[in-house]
Image (cartoon, rainbow, N blue to C red; front, side, top):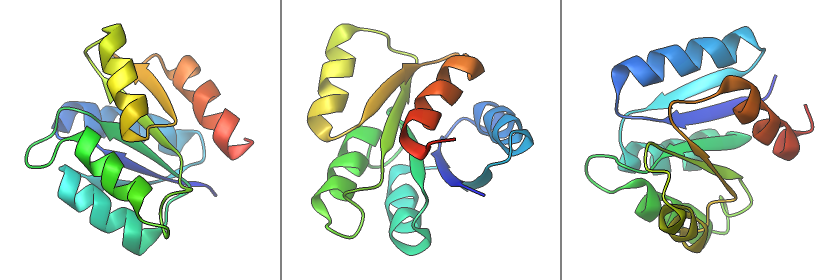
Length: 121
């Protein structure tokens, strides 16, 4: 069962997306801020991270930079999630090290396709 770390500060988004992923056979770990997301990635070693970009404390860009700078977590794919669909947000996400980018509200079929590309599901 692949494990996904969902880093999302909005409780409604977190609950909805985690339930939908669990119904599709994923184990989901939750973090509500960037710092916890980095810590859980280091300790739990998920197969993939879904990273909200607008987070309290350290934002998703900085959290991703920290994960990609650490040899222990650098290979874990990170998909950025954001309500900001501007092309510069996608560019900034990729510069920070995000492996892919998706917009909110999440279209589950599209997101599952992106997850599947990394996890061969």
